[in-house]
Length: 480
Image (cartoon, rainbow, N blue to C red):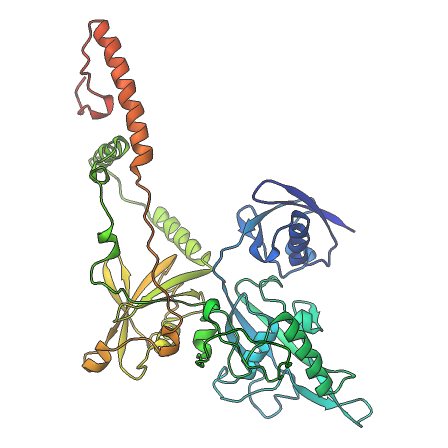
């Protein structure tokens, strides 16, 4: 039986979508965005300020019929999804692991995930796989035919090359983990015919990816992206755009995580100190003085100690707040003052953070230490304890981590660049913006209050009163 869901976009436009029990919520989102002429990849669904899992069907979502969902714009920075690929039994018959696990950006397509797992160095064994160019014997056993990599995920099968070009976000997988079951299905085409079809497809869609490099847009600057070389040769009619020819080889540990790299500052003087300051920036507003008086009065009052029940309630609320955190952003500052910004999830530990930083360093063999900034100062992170960053250490929001060299590291390493050449090549300048003065609104309020006081003073003077009446908020306790 069909039900109805009302979708409300940020501009309060409404559309009604008819849903069947087996309809996926990602399809509901796509249909609503199509009617509202919006880009579906840029939006997500929420209900009562809670994000809706788009990868499940309406039957399993627990949503009541006739409910209203909000269409909210997604964060521009991609999230991290843990992907487990179940390898067919025939390919894993040699005793190696039949399930490969790695982390990917939510903007990565299923095809790119297969190509990344094919490159090896993902499961630690160093073995390379062949998922996208496999040939098998046909049913009659006479000829070899192309085996298409069909993927099954959350009750859906992706059986065409167009399906495999969909990103994790398009399929509703924006965080957490997902299991992809791979099956090689024989087709009626030979391997060479299938290559020609894929060649034509990639030529038309400009989606060429490299066999040995994971084509994940996490550490790639799109303005300086080099043309990757697919195993399938491009047609002679395709003209490559002028790009850098310098090769870039990124570790899967780095490439699987969305990363932003910033160059070190070129001057020893902070850019904020070079901005022009105004005297009004240091003048407290009327609202600020009122807040100061309120804080002084609050500090002089006696406060009772919390009971055991209140302490337990506060601890439970803090634990629930940490459990609700899906991911955090960690800004890593290196000894040469270059910095990297990357997301981490509940599953990441201090050991994962050390591995990630070591893969960024130009001299990974040198000893180094990580310290994170807190209200108590810099606190060291121990690589061997493998504590989880969010649940154990309580990381929330954006966290600052500093990298420091060990005492035995020589001057050459200390004075040289901290990051690898391929990482430095995609770095960009830190953008500084001039924040509008907060006094604009405060001064406007102060001007209104001043005009009001002057008006009341004139009235009081005309009535024979005292125009220098003290404001009520400035009176000391006990004074009338």
